[in-house]
Image (cartoon, each protein chain N blue to C red):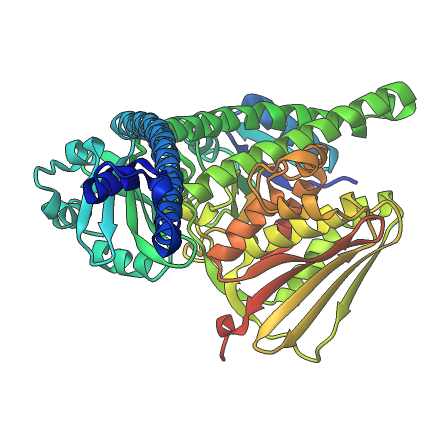
Amino acid sequence: MTNSEHILIVDDEPELLFIYKKKLELAGFIVSTAKDGVIALGMLKTEQPDLVLLDVKMPVMDGATTLKNIRSNPLTKDVKVVMFSAFKDLHMYADPEKDNTVLGVIKKGEDLNTLVEQVKNFMSSK
Amino acid sequence: MHRTLERQFKNAFGDMKPEEVSGNLANLLKLINNTYVHSDEEQVLTSRSLELSSKEFSDLNKKLDSEKKLVEQKVEERTRELKYEQEKLNIIIKNMRSGAILVNLAGTVTFVNSVACTELSITHTEDSLNILSNFFPSVHVFEFIKKALEGEPMNVPEVGNGSKIFSLSFNPLKDESQILGVLIWISDITERKLLEHDQNQFIAIASHEMRTPLAIIRGNAELMLDDEVVKDNEYLFKGVKSILSGSVRLLNIVNDFIDLQKMESGSVVLKPVSVDILQVLKETIADLMNITKEKNLHMNLVVLSDFIPSVYIDKERVRQIFINLISNAIHYTDQGDITVSVENSDGVIKILFIDTGVGMDIEEQKHLFAKFSTGKGFIKSREYGSGMGLYICKLLSTMMDCEVKLDKSNIGVGSQFSLTIPLDKKVTI
């Protein structure tokens, strides 16, 4: 399956970044990666991804602050963002029901096929 | 002639000989003589008898004396034993790490050990209960004593005072038929609690640190299984698959540890929302369909009521209980069916999880919901997951005012678990 949709994954674990990138590329997505929020914001100046998969807990700049910066920039304010977290009590960090600028949450730790399915679902949502 | 009669005869008749007397006097003399002789014999007998009585009396006296000595000896021995027992008790009480206060039926303190005196700064026994009550303001000391005197033991597993943590227990003192008083134990559990906290911290940190490397192992194994080279090589495929299943298993254990630590430390925040229970059940069953098919099992969802109302509950936590119970059913069933039934009746939503699996014996059932169960159950549960799944289910259901339990189980026949969700959580529109 080929897919020209572009995803930016922001996560501080380089090895996990590699795995997610590879799997999503195999699923036909174009994938770029950033290891923290600052790098992601820099990349968003030149790239217009269809979806940003944003880790919640990161050094340098965490997910919530990165999201705030994305929304405050007119160039990036409308980009689709999905939070990405290993925490079960995710609402303590980011709550899509309270923050309507977040499209949803993908729980880390599921299998990669589930990740692909979830990304596809978010892609096809408005 | 009897010597007394002879003397009297001589006094009366002078030189006359008794043989010289005749007729009636001679007969009289004979009779008197017989009387004297008879009397003498009687006297001898009496004297002998007295002699005998006196001997018996003396023997008896001797016997009594020796018995008395024996009794005295025994009393001395028993006193020594009692003293020893008392000493022993004193030593135990003195060296006891817990404080003890003894209250009689009238509610008066009759004994306070040295630990209690030191811990609570008690100087006068009679002030003990007021001091105890002031020391632990959150504990209803007098109410608990009253309850204990009525036969109901009261426990305070954990109560803080400044930098120390204590546990208190109010135990009714009973003999066979009646309550005699209350014994209050005061134990300093600060050290134990600190150790527990350190252990939990260690587990939490270790688990967190393990999660990312395990996710990396798992992710790479998943990627490799997509690779044609691996797919075409049976040895590689099997090996990578087992790396994947091992890492998933380990990740689940680590996640259980992290979850448990959060629950036990009270840092789990529930997020109740309106939840369609039937929908969550369907989703969970769909998620677990792969492993159900792998084991060639049949999964049935039976809806026994026309309408299953939505309830106000933490969706993810309910899902977690469903996953645990259904995964267990799948894991412990080698052939047959897993049936999940849902019913709305008597003010509750009742969900049954029925399997045709290995079942459990009574002993195993006893420890089923324990944190670290012992014996067979422990060994068995260790074979699958962390062995904490049901304990987590229990904690979660309690947190959400639900009830999870094992309804029945028979070796070789299967088990039935149930989750009851009260309908007071029903969402009213």
